[in-house]
Image (tube, rainbow, N blue to C red; front, side):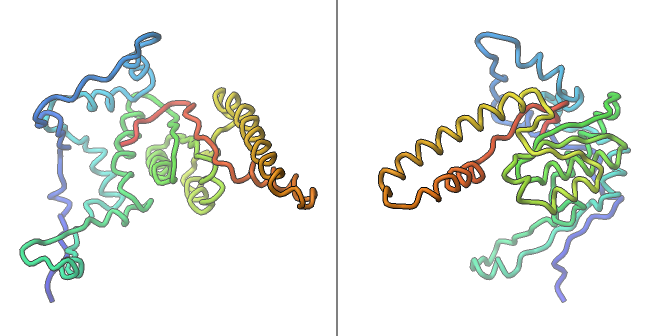
Length: 253
């Protein structure tokens, strides 16, 4: 039987991260600053984990992975294997090209995002932080950070876009099993969320009323008993906003 799997041993596990920035044909433009108001870079320095921000701007090609992070990587099942996609090669008619895919789905949370979550949580802990806070869209990043925080004894607070929060109950349960506090967003837990919620509801009501007026002119023979139900359904189905107000933002890779 052909060997279609490539697996590194723990002894072969990398000791450094590769930074592509020094090898780009030309440097990336510096971060844009607002024309007026406070400096964005000063804000980042106050809110981001300092080591992560330093690595973001680093000009070193190789950055040493701390031994503690390497141990946590092994604990969560890295290095993960490569598999050769023979059936896909055959389907595409490839003769001289081999295709491989990496099994990041074997991560405890089901995605590659634990790789950066572990590192960010570790550096936050080293800086004396006790709580990590972040936003999440589909939920994988929130799950990854919840898992990383649980390994390092940190508290984790996740703000999750409401439409998906209501939908993915299983992933929400998974975050809570890792010890995270999970809130739909916008949330009354934050100042920005409290400010957004009334405005959002007002805009949605106005949109629904406008749509209702146009609809009722075209469907004037329908029973008025349906009108309140139609407005409520419009409110329920409207897409909620994802508040960016978090307690301590963590950079998402």
